[in-house]
Image (cartoon, rainbow, N blue to C red; front, side, top):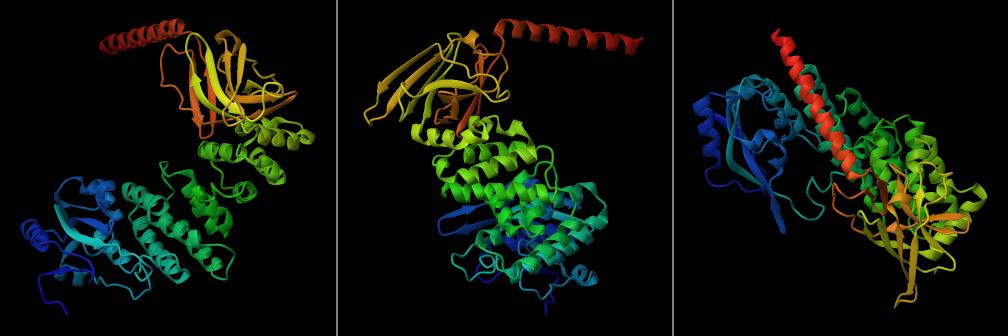
Length: 487
């Protein structure tokens, strides 16, 4: 029914600031472009934020550009922060589909691709109200009907972008699917998922169709996000839920937590989804799960997770967990000993004088002894401290301080704090803040959640001399190369 020169859209519960449409229309009249984009904010009762902070296209005003010039415009696909030339809109046959959810993303992508030129104005032209409760379309985004609608609309967008064969656009769009809108929608669905349902097969099939036509995920996408989408596309919703929201199982009983991680790894392996680099993302949560308290109450699940880690990654991923290298018949005893000791490291001090660990334990010096465990070569005996001091804590347990001479530690070995009880070595969770980097400190410290890895390095003098030699060699090569080019 519109008869004007321009088209704008707004939702009834949002706010259009004074001067917003003037800013958009003035830009179009001066530039002759087909679309003018404006900045926008989102708000709710407790805060206000600027979604465009993560979109490079909105970092500066522009006129007469194309989507290929600013591909992150793809991240902004609502219809309400823009003005369009009406005759251009009609010539391109743009319209909104009658679908339950995400009815603006396809016409907006079509519009962006069809536009000869677009403008970006710096003015905030729209305030989007995020309403609390479950009545809004956004709040209902995790229902099966809504997510199926979104996935089908996104699939059409993926085909439109892929047809351009523009590498920049496809790279940004892949990030939208795996790192932004696609992941957010699937994560919402998984957050409500509790058990298999008849809708799961339809959601998995729709997601699989979307991923089949989407560009490959860019390298910056976190492994968990990629794996969550790929697992869900294969119908593995239980495993996908763990990776979509790993923090959600942090506080649960060890049996639940260990079983969840074991299932996730088993399904990743079954569908051959593991990629080089995924182990780096899994190191911290797996170390946290395998060293968590009350493991003895979930020994079966603990061993299942160890087996899954070993099958997928090999022994190296278990080098932070000494119990994993114990003989099969000793594992349950080791887990029970670890739970009884309930040991933690509270302070780590390094320096030329050596390494000092301060911690606590429910078991005293007559039963256990602090050591450093060499996980890369599990057959090596643990490094014994030069001195250990014990004293009773006010709470009834024991406080200890263990000192290690620099020369007693092997060079470049991944060492983790542990307790030795006879021939059994068990992990000690770290609550310490690792020391700041110091070039003179003979130790390097790598925290992995509740586990800290300590490596001894060479004395700083030969390291400094080596750097000087490498720098000098580089300058000589550069000088010789420039002379050769001149000749």
